[in-house]
Amino acid sequence: MRRRHLVHLAVAAAATAALPAFAQGTFPAKPIRLVIAFPAGGPTDITMRQLADNASRVLGQPVIVENKPGAGGTLPAQLLQTTAADGYTLAQIPLGVFRLPYTTKINWDPVKDISYVINVTGYAFGIVVPADSPIRNWNDFVAYAKANPGKLSYGSTGTLTSPHLTTELIAQQVGIQLNHIPYKGSAELAQAITGGHIMAAADSTGFAPLVQAGKIRVLNTWGEKRLDKFPDVPTLKELGINIVQNSPFGIGAPRGTPPEVVAKLHDAFRKAMDEPSYAQSLARYDMLPMYMGPQQYTKFAQDTYATEKALVEKLGLGKAN
Image 1 (cartoon, rainbow, N blue to C red):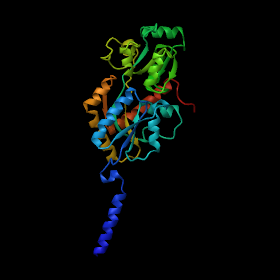
Image 2 (cartoon, rainbow, N blue to C red):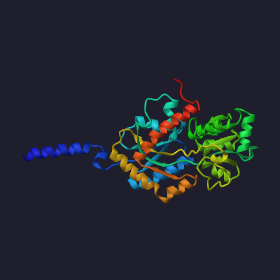
Image 3 (tube, rainbow, N blue to C red):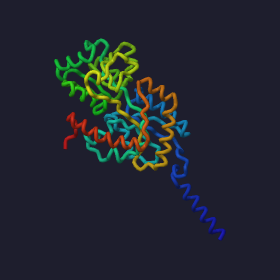
Image 4 (cartoon, rainbow, N blue to C red):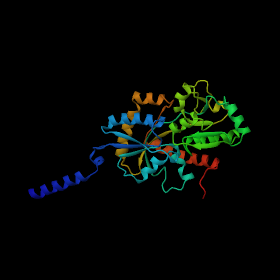
């Protein structure tokens, strides 16, 4: 009898040892990878690295940031489709992810095939020109574009990103045609605008240091109200363009990630958001915390999936059937 009892104990111990780390309540038991959609050195990279560093201290394991730029910021989300649902690979989810099925043939669903962990922030956007440009303000910009259809070149952080689509929506509303040049991220775009390769740029306010250095000029910003950093620069709404764009983004995990793992990740990143160091990193780029928990973030994904379809169709940028 004692021998049988010992055998049962041994089998139970072996089964427990074979369970994943999260099932034993020890998640995370190794470093976590957080893949972000834009290159090193830009606002997304810098703020997400601070957030990851803060979360590492809460989780007791390193959260290692990996940059995977390109494809309009959608590569990290695509990576989740071929990654184990164990909580050890996470991805930034930019707004462009919700446009992907309408512009590209894919075999996964941005709403159903991602476990939404937490939304953390969004961007402050604007349109800038070189400081020596003859375009001094937004009226000059529109006047030049109307006089030279398709010749006013502007750069963005990638095709079908929020800066690209919002600028095209602005152009449609004011009746101008622009020449879009995509780049892989803010750092590359900054080199292009300061190097004279493009006439304007649409980007988040990672361009602020270049404004302060006297190298570029801001024509408008895209928030609900003027930015403290640029109090003399009008919003789109003040210019008669009824658009507000802050492109919220957060963190997702593969579909099927255990709820207890999602909850632990959420709690860690929520605490990481509350650290003063994160608020300070956001403030550098006029970004604000935009917290959504798993349920609210999932609902946001569902709603945004529908609204982005309407935007893509309005701009005539949907994929051919």
